[in-house]
Image (cartoon, rainbow, N blue to C red):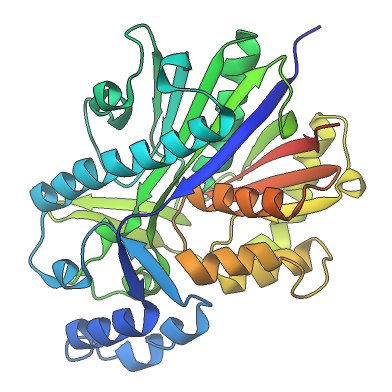
Length: 350
């Protein structure tokens, strides 16, 4: 019988520059209002997003300078490398391990391109062994934290006793674009922040929780809902469909199908935990799963304190849920480009 995979630790990290939402709104007004006729109406998103502050790898003024791929890529490598080290070190310390104990590292990131990938760039500084297995994953977007947890658990289960380190890093601020006079770009400017989260997993050990099952649901003909466009200036955000109504109409049936393949039902879940894409998305998820309005308190708190950091955000929520005390069975779920729903079920350790 396969050994059960345990979540040993989870930790998070943010870059040094804390940016208040009111300051972003003022800077965005200066950068967009005179050039975008519909700006004043769209600018309400800075107040309705539920976000108070965010963190970024560069000071606010930097984002309003002329930027292209070289500048954004340099910031991604420098800022992403340090965030990797910060989050990974905290997770390993919490697990009572060192980088030399890690057998496999899964790196999730969709907000920059680096070859060699980030875990290779920090290997010497971290102290990874030369025989470590590297699994860099690109393109999962906001679903990356939960999807990465699923990938890491499968890697751990395949080799019982091995230590698997998952690190999700996103520098969403590097996609802020002054040249994109679109609704999607204004929303992104109001919503996204930078951060990283890391987890340590191991099969056959005691830990915080057992990763019971995982799964995905991919909706056909939905490539236009979320993603990146690419041009000489960098990434451009794609939000081509209203995501909250889509989530309200479709998420419960998709998650029910994921659970069913693992022999579970929605009624078996004691606590739902979600990636908080935005305050409207959180409300839509509460309605979709018949949760009391305002019940997703940790999701709203993470969104207010850090913004939407894409992949790491769900792991920030998981960290907060663990600090508050895990329920008997928690389902962690995120949506991401594809358009995809990804879920992982965690049973509280006895």
